[in-house]
Length: 219
Image (cartoon, rainbow, N blue to C red; front, side):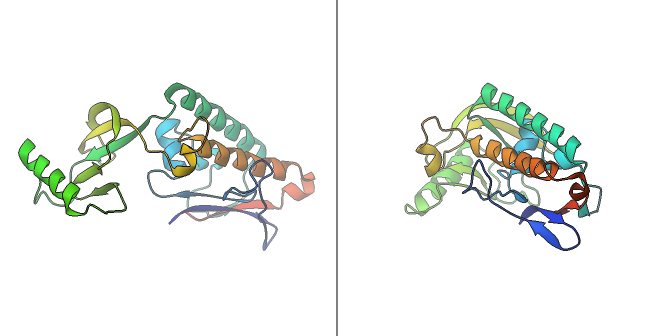
């Protein structure tokens, strides 16, 4: 599940072609998306710069097909890329996650350091061959191979519940590990650059044609 954005043309047509800069990327000129999980494009942009696909294109409320003001979108997209690159230069491979209390039940919650340790040991030892070494379940956030953390900051989450914000270094994917200077945010920059390519593609058309282009927005 996620937000899918398509470039439409006229009544029924659409455009979807490989990026010139990143031809093998799953983002295309005329198609981009954001997964609804914490590492989807919009989620990452909101917790870093606050400027996501909604900021760039300003879709009208409850209107899933619309004609953006393409030149304004280009300026906002350039701004989003610049600010995101500034963020990367400042924090590099650092991210933040939110650890909140249980939403529906307190049954089984640990009430001492020993009880919390027992939960950890049980999960660590119950399946030595588990394929997922980092996961979240009702008992908490688990990083069985360890996680490098820099800060634990008490606060409130989006539901106004007590939470802890953890500043940490996420795990690299296998592809990222093979890069010369791996960075967890590099692919998000590529996504934004392909969004800009899409806008530039529309703006390169004759004025009479630009009016025929629109975005189909899934949510």
